[in-house]
Image 1: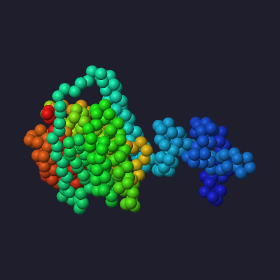
Image 2 (image 1 turned 180 degrees about the vertical axis):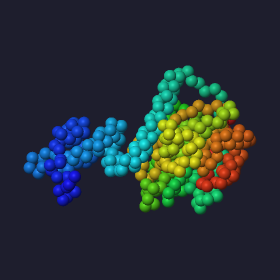
Image 3 (image 1 turned 120 degrees about the vertical axis):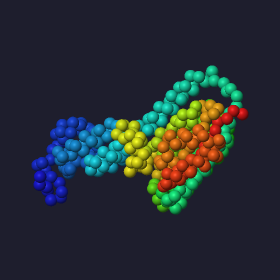
Image 4 (image 1 turned 90 degrees about the vertical axis):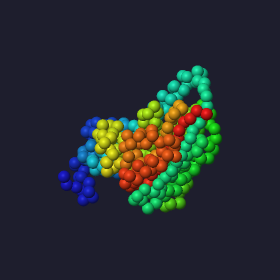
Length: 369
């Protein structure tokens, strides 16, 4: 194909908007809308009558725009995707859809909780009084020069945050400090726990943005956050990123958070096994975090869990979970005589595995008072 000297095909090889609509299987109205939004510009617009002319080669891009609109991708993201080569575009769509699925799963869990809560609200009565015993600790590890992990354990709050980037240490500390302020530190009624979680999650996000505002690279720095707010009968969970929460109950260890990571999305869609994910080169690529450039709708997952006497909870950064398998975690948690011992032995496990990253742990036991 020749061109007109300006990088465009000659007018004889262009087609009208009607012909291009048939070629791309889109309506002329949709094409005009794509033009107005800057998603798909015609090659030529007649200066006299305003007629739009397209290169037939644009049909593939037009259909891609339509498909991306159909899956709900925002216009700004579509503009970025259609500018990429096919391999990079496929990777960008995978990341986008993994995030949508993670957010949908979180909303589904919340809906199930609300249905159960409302269905049984009148029949619920607290029996006895529960409390928690707790401990937390961090370790710089064997490789890193600074410690960007933060951990906290108190009578109303357990939290772990894993910072990254130039401002990572400040981001992780800010996220946890925000949760330590009221209302998280006060006694939140169980019925109000979801509202409390929403409030503290927003406060943590604001605190991280404020902490990173002066770093010069706020979008490249941030933190994960996994935290539990204790009410005396229930635990409210706030979670974003790939730090994790586990529950040891009846001798079995359950992971109760879902990693917001690319490898987790690949496990979810069956393209990667748990064993392969353990050593995947993109293991550290996160889909959701708290950062200075948080987009709308990227907040933490929120859920509420009923507590039972004898439960043992572990919150940890990936400095532990990425190098120590679940069976080893379960063995140490089951054998430790208290939260303090568990934290020390878990940090030692990470050290024995090479400790390539900072490590943070918080452990709490639910006990009858």
